[in-house]
Length: 578
Image (cartoon, rainbow, N blue to C red):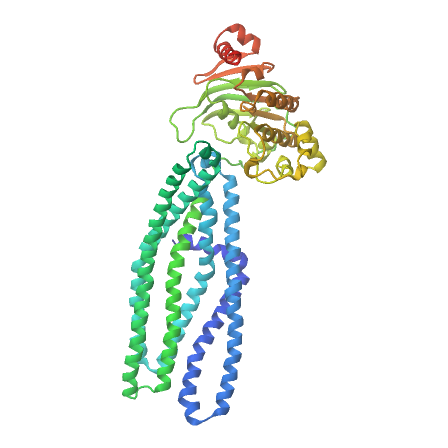
């Protein structure tokens, strides 16, 4: 816990001036609150009995001035204190998002998007409240308790000790509820993360749900998660209610004790009416730090639970990082070689690729075909180091990809996938993603090469047309051509086409094939193909099975061999004919 608190405190360092201002103003507020009961006691005991109206007016004016200063100090605490919390939340969200960019595909394969969003949004919002109110409430509470104790001891030490004897009881009660509150808030975090994950999944698949008329089924699934969240929230509020109600009960008893014991002390002439007024005011001020401490306990449990989840992600070490002596790829030719490469996913026992040897020479086009699950897509994801291989080496121009800086490696590789992802925004935004520093003229030229420029000009806002979330307003072929335009803009020497046209109709496929052919010209190109008719002109075709590379050669040679490839080709041809 000490390490966690130090990590939390480190986020105050960049904003220490604002933090000091907040704490200073909080101290002024506490001092003003401590002074008021003593002034009231003096007015009741001395000024009014002596008929000193001049002093009454003078102290009234002084107190009004103090109230104005207290207002200013409290405004700073309320506004800039919250701004401090917002700054810290901003820094934490920045660090978390930046760290997420360094994590490998494996993390995203095994983590729901909704869970990640929950940590970025819900958890950090509660941390903001702790970052602002936590140190401030703790500081004001301690100042008020210590100050009240000292001043009240000067009035009547016996009554003061009676009142302050309740503090250990309150502390014991708060600590006894601490663990339960911590566990309940952690459970609430898990439940809201599950709801976010389910919500993101359902909304993303809303078209599928409607096409299968499964709206009621989706409602039932969401209702179950929502019910579990409701029950977790109820349990957390039950524990919180026990805590707050218990503090309230103690407060009421304390007020009654002050009145009863104070009346007895007046009867015994230990104190007078002015002293009792001061005690009553101090007890009310004394209750403020107790309430602040109770609020702090809630915020602490809530915020630190979120901070723990925040740190959990930050402490996940990226498994794919640059070596200290990693090099830049410059003026590469594009020769790719696999040497004894083996790979298996972390959560799978079976090996996807085993002792694979493969060479793709500069400027050549190599196609990979084979059954599903043979590792075709996995092979392509290993070249840009989206996953770390178990054994062997992958080399580009004779350099092990593990010795190349990740950014440099991936800048030189272009990937077109079957499932195109477009960002929410405009067509211009999505094409420029290939290279954000390129000019508008270069973006338009890339669109022309991708055979999408003419279509864009037919749209009401041209390149500034909004395409909806994930490009939902575009057809599959239009989205695919925008992704190809991105690659023309990026202009990488190595190109990977992962079933880039398998989901398109024949007419659209022909258009996109011409774009891809132009894109592949002069580049080292690796094609994963489902439709074998699209790879007949490849320099070499590999048939990849669970046993490794079973066949290799040109289209004609593999047909003459009359084995796996020939059977696959004839099977597809029959389907086309039928």
